Length: 69
Image (cartoon, rainbow, N blue to C red; front, side):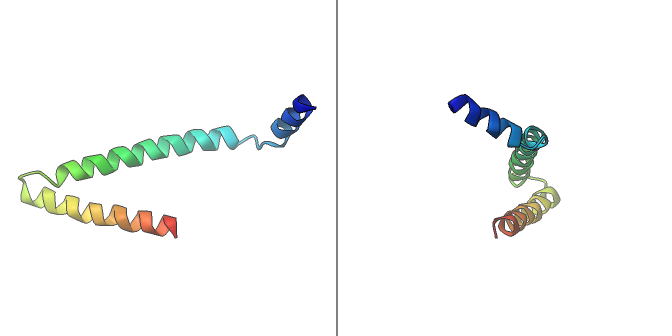
């Protein structure tokens, strides 16, 4: 019976599920790297780059907030 249940789960699984999971993991990695890079730029002694990083940090927060609502 367990094998039949497992077979049924597999047959009902969307053919895109694995592709979506892979894309999600890639997106999460890129987002994490972007966020870390922006945070690093906030500490630069180059004033205009530090200011730009602060703007990008606010953008990251706003985008995250929109996705969580």
